[in-house]
Each structure stands twice: as C-alpha cells, then as structure tokens.
Image 1 (cartoon, rainbow, N blue to C red):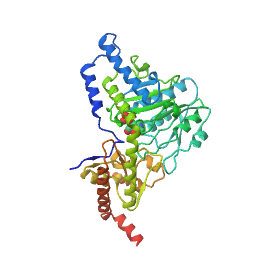
Image 2 (image 1 turned 45 degrees about the horizontal axis):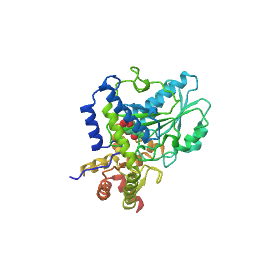
Image 3 (image 1 turned 90 degrees about the horizontal axis):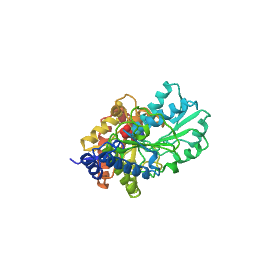
Image 4 (image 1 turned 120 degrees about the vertical axis):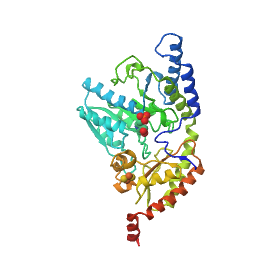
Length: 394
Ligand SMILES: Cc1ncc(COP(=O)(O)O)c(C=O)c1O
Ligand code: FES
C-alpha cells in the first residue's frame, strides 16, 4: 500500500546527511568535550562548530546558543529561568502569553501561577492571530516576561513577532518566542524579530529527537533548571549529547539553505490541498490564517464528522495525518487552540491537520484529495447528524 506521511508538524524523518554526520560522531568522537586531552579537544571542536552553525542559521552569535534536551526544555528554561531570575531581583511577577501556546509554554506558565506569578493569557482572533495592540494594553511596570510563539503548531498561524519585538524595545520585559515550528520554514533572524530568547527543536527539521537549543541574547540572564557541571554556561549542565547536537546543526544548516525554494514548493502544494478540499468537499472550513500561515500546514474542519474516524480511515489508506481533538491527545477536550479561536466543539472535533514535508509530491496531494473525498462522503452517509443536516436543508 502507498504510504503518505502528512504529519511533519509532529515530527520528521531524519535526513541522510544528518544520520551520516551523527554516525561519524558516534564512531569517531566519543570524547567528552570538557576533557583537556586530544579526544576531548576534538569533541569540543565539533561542539563549537555545531554552535556556530546553529547561531548563523538564526542570525545570532555562537556565544548566545545553549544546547538543550528538546524544544520543551528550551521553552522551560526560557520561561522558568527568566521568571525566577527576575523575581529574585525584585523586578516583578507579571507574565504575558497567549491562549494558543504549545503546552511546553502554557503549562509552564500555569506552574508559575502556582509559584505566585500572575499570567495574562491574551486571546487571538478567528484566524488565530494576536493583535499587537493587545500586548501593548497588557504591559505593566511589573511585566517581566512576554512569551509568544512564532507560529502555531496546530493551525499554522504566524504571529507578528517582529512588531511585538519593536514594541518591547521600550520595555524591560524579556521577550521569548517558541520558534520550534518556524526555524527552517520561515526566515528566522533574532535581531529582525527583536527577541531575547528563542526556542528550537531538531526533530521538526529532519534532525534527531531529544535535542534542542535556546538562543539567549547577550546580557540576558536565566536561572538554570538543573544543577551540575559548568557545561552550556551552567545554564544547562550535563555532558553534551554531541551526536544529537551535530545532527541539529547539520539539519538547521540544510533547512535554512533550502528554505527559499522549499517553502515556495510547499506553499504551492499546501494551497492546492486547501483549495481543492474546500471546493470539492461540502461543509469544510480552513482553520488558521489564509495567508499568514506556515508553508506546510493545512488545518481543515469537516463538519458532521468525528476527527478520529477520519484519521483512522485515512490511516487505512496509508495516509498519516493528525488532529488536535480528543482521541489523539488522550484527553476528553478538543484542541485548546481551536476552542480559543471560537470554534464550537463539533467543528473542533472534525478538524484535521495535514503537515507536508520535503518528500511530499504533487501526486501525494492528488491521492489525498481523492481519498479524502471518498472517506468524508462515506463517514457522513453513516452519520445521523449529517442526515439531519441534509433533511434540514431540503
Ligand atoms: C510549537 C512547539 N513548541 C514546542 C514543542 C516541543 O518540542 P520537543 O518535542 O522538542 O520537546 C513542539 C513540538 O511538538 C512544538 O510544536
Ligand atoms: S475526535 Fe474523538 S471524540 Fe471527537
């Protein structure tokens, strides 16, 4: 059976260049980068070369890159580390974020509320976009941290980070962005975005799982979450995962060098997928912004259908997609992101996220469009709510 993977927002397969570079490290560079003998010095060189590559990819200085164990960990260090440092310095306890952040940010903010911090969760509009003015309105003298994701992992909406960054230049609050979904897909430059902290994850850009990085602007101080040795400027102590770090560096380097052509290609396929589904399948709706969205993300609601039946039916045809609804996330609630945009339960439950990748072809997209039309029609035929809807229209 044909296999089509349209879940690159969840994770990506490692590319061969990454695997080859990692295998070389595993085979030939087992030294501890902290050791002063030649094995250590050689490993240290690999580590610093990787740091320079990651820094270059986002317009940063190598000294501003801290390697972490994941995107989640980078977000956690950024948020907990800033909040605790600022509180210790008596600068305030107010944090601003949005209702549609990834749980790595949202739940970290909730933890800080338990520690006595006050968090403002800003709403987004029906396209999942935050108004810059709402950040301005929420800012207070005691605001110590603003954390807003660059693009949303479910609906693909891209936030006006550069504009918010400009606004915050006149305020002492630290500005963090979760760029896990954008690095390698959109141009990400820490100075253009005017951010102080920025989180990256390797496995979304054809790198290994369990590796991330945090950009920490020169002069910004964060409390570490772990205590131990002096690695990564004591912000993230523990012997570095050198192979993973080199894998991240190779992946980000390739993703950024291919960005312009690949993003354009993906946008073309994404728009074809969206356009054909919205025109060929009745009662469908695009979630997220029609233009300001990730080049590889299509999120569509199919009314009168359960997301999980749709995912399972597509899986039987060899097509892997995801949804933010109850069954896939293991909770009873539909996606907090779709609900935050004002979707009703039913529409949120019938949503599908399709995220394209570098191996996705136009034939794949044609196959998915054709299969989805058949699957949706079959599922609706079996649905009493659809029957009621048809009768109500007659
Ligand atoms: C927006 C966003 N932030 C953070 C993460 C977490 O990254 P990691 O899986 O590397 O911990 C993800 C991945 O699911 C994500 O999409
Ligand atoms: S998608 Fe599973 S209950 Fe709605």
